[in-house]
Length: 419
View 1: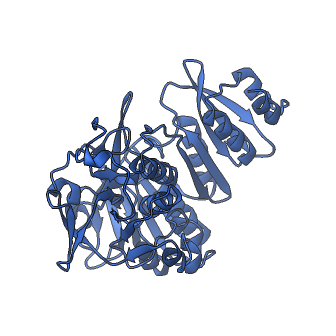
View 2: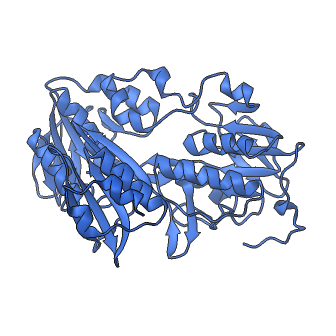
View 3: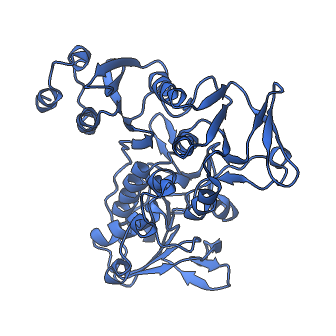
């Protein structure tokens, strides 16, 4: 979408302007923060449907679930930060509709809020098991919010039996915590390996081997056909007839972008809220950021659910609202803690990429990915130094020699400084 210089939406919002941000997750919060950092001095309101102030989600299924991180330490900002930055925070508040013609939103309680610019940072929601499978039984959990983890924590007991449906990052992190608590853990995954959609085969194999060595049982290439029990879950029947005993079930089957509000307002939806490379939707006064946004980029659409995308797309949208006109050039990064493994990923690998393995000290190693000779991604498995250097190289589009990367004697610092 191209705007003429004299179009009202092309103007930089002034001191009398109002910007509303729907969604108080990391993308929404960082959009607000970056708007202030980029000079926006007008009215700024952050609206969230959860009762809690913006918090970190990644530790929920890791340190917080283990009880190693207190609730207050999840907060992204201190309580007085919002007042100091003149950001109105409306929590426990649902936006019911958007009136694009009048440039206002209607809250669930009937309150109308006007805007000059609107940012949709509505995030994603956890997929639930179909009713035909879950049958409304107690003891079944999905993981997305702080409330979800608070509900799950008391259910994870020593000598209990946990079934994880789905072999993605969230499911495997929950599996690792449960094994650490002494639970029996089974993971059912429809693909032939865990992390099939989100990690390379090499990295997935290493993670699977770690879990198996710690006592996790995998059922790969299989699916749950029915959960068993009267009122509370007692087990599961797989498609091949296998019965697995379980008193707790966690569904880790991915997320869905929260697009209902946008769809009802007439926006194009395509695996998320359709946005151009600048973060603009089909309405020149409305932008999208974070998990809910599908950016139209060279090579196709891009929608990611990660902290890195939340931060980077929020920064992009804030700068562009303030007149930068810069396209999104994502540099994805991600991490996961499972048992004593810290997995760190930068860039995006694809099936068919050439993989170079660099063996580090002890059990640490890193996987470096090349596509048509160009370095495109790195996975660090207990190799934080390799990861950080790889991430730095990706940021400047440098492509180290694969033979040098594979040489464990060669110092990566020297390799990075020469680029």
